[in-house]
Length: 130
Length: 50
Image (cartoon, each protein chain N blue to C red):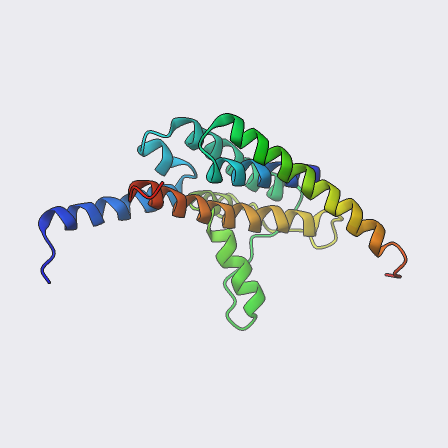
């Protein structure tokens, strides 16, 4: 079965939409004209991530030898560009002695996982399923 | 814990529902559910030593 140019364009746009939605939380919904949803995601998810960093949570490294650390790193990565910006600025080192360390990790991991759900939701909206 | 419950409820409600009043209803129920279940679980674990 041959793929038409229109279908190729659509799949390219969908890829860009998902990429934008992942990189900047809520960008996909803003792109699709769902302004209020996009703005809520744009504020809530980076704020959640910032709280996680502020209370000394850790951005986990990709260590394949330790599967749980690797999975946590994957979840952290879900927040998109914010992950790289925080890493480049030296945030997210974590302080295991801090009382809030585990709470911070929970905030960082869940912020990434929620952004992945937001990407899937943007994809569903673009496909006309919602 | 309340902050965490608030953010998670907010995002889930906004993903799941399109109408504002439905989002508020679901978000409120989830937020209350998170807090109530945390309190109940906390008291259930109270007798156990660390």
